[in-house]
Length: 86
Image (tube, rainbow, N blue to C red; front, side, top):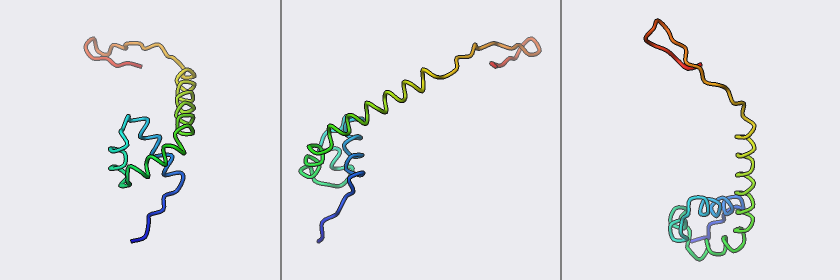
């Protein structure tokens, strides 16, 4: 049976997801259907890079959240009973 070939992108994504979701090697290997040994090699090669990418994603999300326009929420009363936020 021939060996499966995985792209570098797939390997990095697997390691990023392992870090992001706190998966063990065994759990992550089971999810992507590879051996724990193979996953260990991927982790050795891509762990640092994956951590940097996750940190950059975190920074970008924070910048995005900080840049949002904050609007005041006002209660509009309609017919004395119902209302809505606008």
